[in-house]
Amino acid sequence: MTTTDTGNLLWFAGWFVALALIFLAGLRLPLQSAASGRGARFRSVGAIVAAAAVLFVANAALVSRDTHIDLTRERVFTPSQRALEVADQIDRDVQLTWFFQAGDQNGGRVKEIVQLMGKRNSRLKVRTVDPDKQPSLAESQGVRLYNAAVIEVDGRRLLVQSTDENEIAVGILKLLRKATVTICFVEGHKELGIVNPTRSEHFETGIGSNDRDAESMVTVTIPRGLLLAAKSLESLGYQTRRILPATGEGIPQPCSVVVSANPRSEHTPEEIASFERYLAHGGSVLLLYDLGFDLQPALAGLVEKLGVRLDPRAVLDPTSHYATDLEIVAVPTYENHVITRRLSLSFFPGVRPLELVPPAQGITTAPLFTSSQDSYLQAHADGVKTVAAGTRERRAHVLGAAAEGTWPGGDAAHPFRAVVVGDSDFASNKYLPSVANADLVLSIVRWLAREERAPAARSRIPVAPVVQLTKSQMQWIFLLVGVALPLGAALIGVRNWWRRR
Image 1 (cartoon, helix red, strand yellow):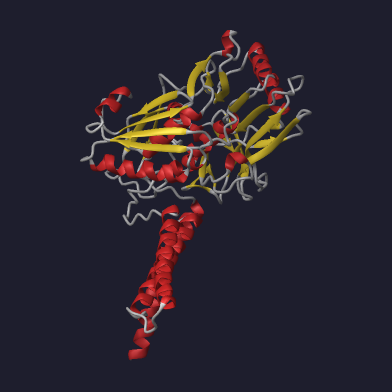
Image 2 (cartoon, rainbow, N blue to C red):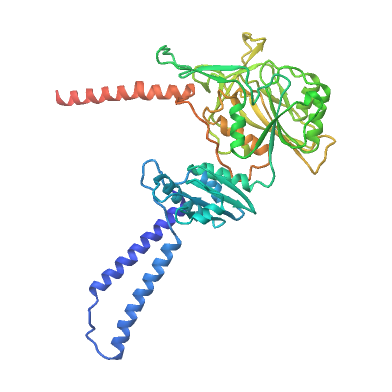
């Protein structure tokens, strides 16, 4: 319940007390005054007018401070938090018309929800229409089916056919966006692709479990790549496309953000030069460089201008990791940055550390997230992992960093933005639905697209029905459920036996 709702409930309590006092006063006041004359009649009329005035003011105050209370366990008649956030941040007039059938329970539910969204912000003007009663209006709007929302902003119009308020909120975001934002995915170096996957990943539900009961395990095959990430971006109104800078086309003009994820071969000098020209003109890049990818000197120089140097070793974290795998580093807390606000746990399988070095003049670099203080590095070459004795220096390692500013020799009026992460698997189809990985990816892209201040809505990604915990979380659960509870029950039993013996 928000502070506004609490205040409105206090107003309701005040209204109820006022009514009770008037009722009690009416019971105690005599029906006819013992006094007579003009003064007695004036007092009687004055009491009636005062009671009517109090009732009018109390009801007016109550109507202006409407409060919605949803007593259903699933809160079916309450808009999602993301839909409310979008409604709260609308800064232009938005006309939302919801077409529903009067007898449809689900359509009626959405009617209540969009009306609640409209009450949150006077800029969102909501109208609900039953096409059976107003067929001409539905026909003029091009609506042929029930449960459809027509959204209009600045003369543009969008039809959303859904009973999900999040889809309606995403539709509002699409129309509020003043220009098309295109996310370009680099290909040509065996990167993780967004279409036509040729490789597959396999995973079993219950990864990390010590109990490998073959009958209870389910093997799921999913395409390897960034297909889910691309679909999530498209559901938020972004356009996605593939680009091939290696063919000499450079970075196309429509690209608002360029993503290079898990390249496996060297870039051509012309390709690296096109990246530099793109950044010099205010472009935005997301560089996801995994273990095993050796940056050639020119590309390493570009990354070092951003204030980042990539280490070829892998980060192992014995304190914060997924299940029992030390190489899947878990990040429960983040550095203070607009990208990492309100993010929860995320996982990074096989991540390499970043060393922050002095960036080029005019560029500022900031870490986004790190491993725990107990983490250490392990050599990783050609798939062979080795750890030399006595080299396990334990400290926190930077795993992701953001840079912005004016590129050397670039246009100061168009600063660039860049994010570098020592892993791409966290954004792949296999790990994107896990915990807050999708939120982190979308937050990074929103910042790169300079939409961090725009209303946000979360894309819905199917999530496997598993519970994912870090090692420390599993230890605490074991201590509580496996030790503390049985021991407490035993102590209570002993105490009772001692008192009754």
